[in-house]
Image (cartoon, rainbow, N blue to C red):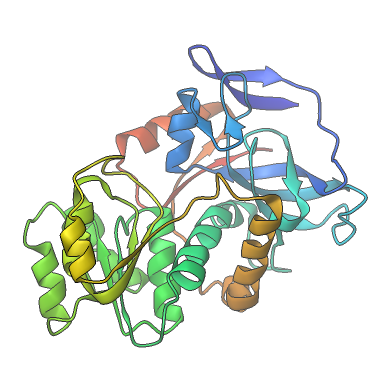
Length: 324
């Protein structure tokens, strides 16, 4: 099979044997895959949990058809149309855990659209519902809202009854589009006054739940924008891995600052996350109410151009690659 791997000098296409599914795995014929910010690090040779590293097949999410299933994956049958998150997705065939595999609607959703969904759905349901414990009527702020995961966060917050949904982006054109995905208000985190804008819009109360994809120098400003007793769930560090932290502000506001990642979770924990999001959101996914815009589509042999588009950070929505 043709696969995209991390070579010594970057992206390399290689011919590899088709893998055999283990007892808890399904073998998927990949029809489309989608890029995530973590893919850039993996292309540079960095590990992403168990995924990545030199010589590893790239890619974290895809959609396609089941061609074989392991002994413990009996719910899946050859021919099932599925979307998956995992590792080694940028290849003609991918092994996916049975519990991280989700069925496409019977009609109306193509593989390109389906490939955009697994990572965003898993990440934002876990952040907003499980760890963020969103209550109806609360104000939710999604930092980095113009990313694919961020756009999904806006939609989930709105769907599940947030009273006010705020999104941040440092790009004026992207901020102008966030209302399409459920944002009542937008802020630019380069503006030093943005926390005061959040406070003013909430009658001085602040945001009860902040989904932080930025951290770095934005961490203290997020705490300033948070409500007393609020929750900040950190899912990304696009603005930096380290920064000064105002411990006194954290204590004064009695905040819960929660870090989450999939990289240190067990297979059973990720299966539970996948099951929970399907229980809460699947009718809306099937109807197309929860969906992400596709920024651009590249054939598999132009995967390098897809990576370059993500590196330039000029896209809105998801970048997709297709396999015949």
